Structures are given as structure tokens and as C-alpha cells.
Image 1 (spheres, rainbow, N blue to C red):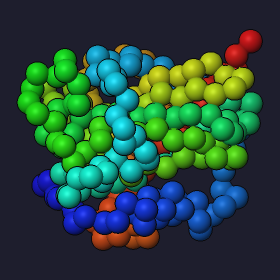
Image 2: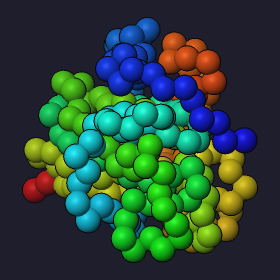
Image 3: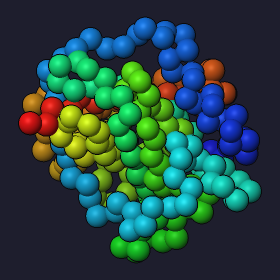
Image 4: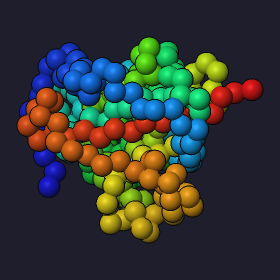
Length: 217
């Protein structure tokens, strides 16, 4: 069921979102691995213009009186290269449809997108290559299983565009892009399970999505 969470001050909510996933385990960074995150299509709905409010809190738009419709979640993780080195100072972006299946994009003719949802966010990776976004749990729309688009770029690595999926969602089995990833391990690497995150507030879940990029030549 879709929930509309109460409005929470932007600075307090974003500060909690960024601090919570690593506060209890500051040294808990994943071991080095050579397995690259599989690239995927950017899709047709990357913003034509980057919104004025494009921070890491997608559920509270500056100037809007209410929070976004949908179930609030935190997506966090670490970005590394294929030798395990964190991508410090890199840029990470996400974009997705709103809780009703609509993108903030002129090519999406399905309906008016939720004005209380940014639909797009970007952040700078910290010194350990870490990031955190506060957004809504992705929902399906005709032809697609729930997903969030990611794009990452930074010094010394090849830029990556990919998509993150929900673990166990029944529509995954029929999604053409999800199943285009033939290697089961690679497919698992872009499939995220969400769990309760009491540090962020009642009813909010969090999921960890780590990304591995190849080094540029």
C-alpha cells in the first residue's frame, strides 16, 4: 500500500539519511572484487533539464508543502574500481518514476508526475566512495519491473550507467532488461533487498547497492 509520509525538515532528514548507513560500522567497506557492475540502458527518461532541486533527498522538494507519495526508502552503498579502490569525489546520479509510474519527462505521456517527488538526484561520493539517497521504493509501470536508474562517473574509471532492481519482485522474471543480464552473479549484483532502518524513522527501509567500475586506460 502506498503511504504518504509526513513532511520532515529537509536538512534533518537528509543528514540522517547520509549518516545512518555507516555510523554503526565506519570500517565496514566491502572487500575488493574484480566483478564489474553490468551496464544497462539509460532509458528514454533521463531529465531533459536537471531540476533546480537535485540533491540526495528526492522525497522532499524545495518549496513543496508535502513529501512525495510512496514508501520512503534509503539507497546507500560504496563505489569502487575493479581493484577495490574507492571512487572518492566521483559523481553519482539516480532517476526513477514516481509512486504512480510517471517520470518528470516530456516523453512520458502517462500522466502528470508527482510534484512532491524530485524524480532525480545527484551526489558527490565521499573519501571512501560512499553515497546515500533518500527516495521512494520503485514501482512498476507498463512493460517494466520496479527499478532505479544509476549513472556514475569519476577520475580514472569508465563511466557507468546501470539499473537497480528489487529482490524477489514477481515482475523481475518477465522484465527484458533484467533478464538481458545473463550471468546470474551479475544479475544478483544489481538486485537489492530492503530491510527496516529504524534509525531513519518508523516504516522506512534501506537497501545497500555497491557498484564496481572498470578503470579507464
